[in-house]
Structures are given as structure tokens and as C-alpha cells.
Image (cartoon, rainbow, N blue to C red; front, side):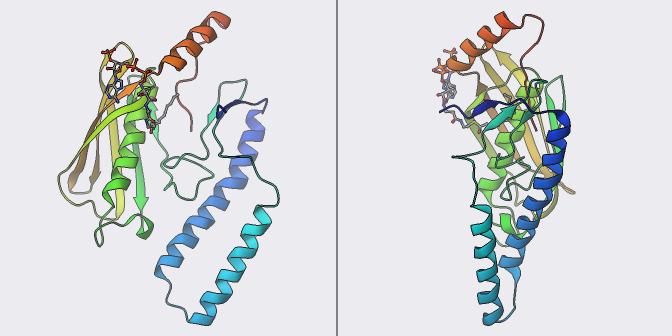
Length: 226
Ligand SMILES: CCCCCCCCCCCC(=O)SCCNC(=O)CCNC(=O)[C@H](O)C(C)(C)COP(=O)(O)OP(=O)(O)OC[C@H]1O[C@@H](n2cnc3c(N)ncnc32)[C@H](O)[C@@H]1OP(=O)(O)O
């Protein structure tokens, strides 16, 4: 089942939902941080667990079947609110607020706390890969050349400290359906992880884009979402 969903939702309704679900996800991120770092006594832990389980049960009373997917409205606004890096409704996502320009650049400043630890005090290498996968993909999409990650290569130059970080990416070159992008994560002292990747517009998407272009000759398809 495709998780790209076309919905008839106004921009005002999207903003209403963003204001409702964004803070909910942020509260759960704070909960995750508190679970990792709490030193309250055993009875308090048991009481907290019961409270959390009751809240989970309330939220499960009515649910989407499966994952959130990517939803577009008639204005072409896309929402990837379940995305593991940028998802407004996903407490696992830091989340990154990614800025773009149409030359194929993407950048974001963000904070990674205790929930993203690998080596003590440092960001897990898989989390850096997660973030760079998204950032390189965002750069490709921003340049009008979106694709699925084919190959992603990373070089970990030094440990990435937990805390305030920046990520940047840009398109290096385009060869047909293949978009090559490069990027990095940096702290205040400079680059910690470098990445290069190839993003491939899948065959099925080529066919869908051709069909869409035939139907809406003047309207280019959406190339990014938030
Ligand atoms: C919307 C806005 C979003 C905007 C923002 C979105 C940001 C999202 C960022 C997150 C991105 C992800 O995590 S995506 C999730 C992780 N990635 C995946 O799950 C991808 C799984 N793999 C696949 O679906 C497929 O294998 C594809 C799409 C990669 C390729 O399949 P295909 O379409 O059939 O392509 P195919 O004809 O075989 O090959 C086309 C050309 O690409 C080359 N090629 C094929 N596979 C690879 C590969 N893995 N690495 C390198 N190169 C490859 C071939 O040699 C060929 O080159 P030539 O002979 O033409 O020279």
C-alpha cells in the first residue's frame, strides 16, 4: 500500500494540526530524556510507568492503520510528520528544521541530547548517518532532483559531541536519474562527520512524475516536504 497520500486539507487545518501534535511529540521527547536521566526512587518509577501506560492506552483508542506516510494537500504542501529525522509528530526525530534553497542546498541547526548517545558523551554513529541521509536527500529534493538513497558513504573524522550541532548538504552533480550529494555534521570546532551519497529517482517514480506532468503541464511536482 502506498504511503504517499493525497488529502483535501486546507493550509489552516495543517497549521492547527501542527500546533496540536508538535508540542505533544516534544513532550514525549522530554519524557525520553527524563527516563534516561531520572534518579527518583523505585516507587516513583513504578507510578510513572503506570501513568505512561494509561496515556498510551488513551492515544491508542483511535489510530491510523500503519505508519503516517507522506501526505500532500491540493496546494502541494507535503507533510512527512512520521519521518525519523524531521517528523513533527515523531518523538524519535530530534526534529530537524531543515532550510533549503533551490540550487540544491540544505542546512539545519539542531540539538542532540542523551537519547542519541553512542560512545559516552558522543552522538551514535548511526544517528549521524540517519541525519546525513536525510540532509543529503533534502538537498537533492531542494534542487528538484529527489530520489531514494542508493549508496551512502560516511567518514567519521572525530567524535561528535552531544549538544548543539549543524548539518549542511548540497548537490555535487546530477547524472540522469542519479543525484550525487555531499554534506557534513559539524560542532563549534568544525566538521565531525562527512558524507557522500547517490539518490536515485526510482523507475516507479519516473513513471508517476511523467504522468503527473502530462496531467498538470504547468505545475511542477512537489520536490520537498516538512
Ligand atoms: C520527494 C522529495 C523528497 C525530499 C526530501 C526527502 C529526504 C529523504 C531522505 C531519506 C532518504 C531515504 O532514507 S530513502 C530509504 C533508503 N533507500 C532505499 O530504501 C532504497 C532501496 N532501493 C531501491 O528502492 C532501488 O534499488 C533504487 C530506487 C535505489 C534503484 O532502483 P531502480 O529505480 O530500479 O534503478 P535501476 O534502474 O536499478 O538503476 C538506476 C541507476 O542507478 C544505479 N543504481 C541502482 N541502485 C544503486 C545503488 N544502490 N547505489 C548506487 N547506484 C545504484 C544503477 O546502476 C543505474 O545506473 P546507470 O546504469 O543508469 O548508470
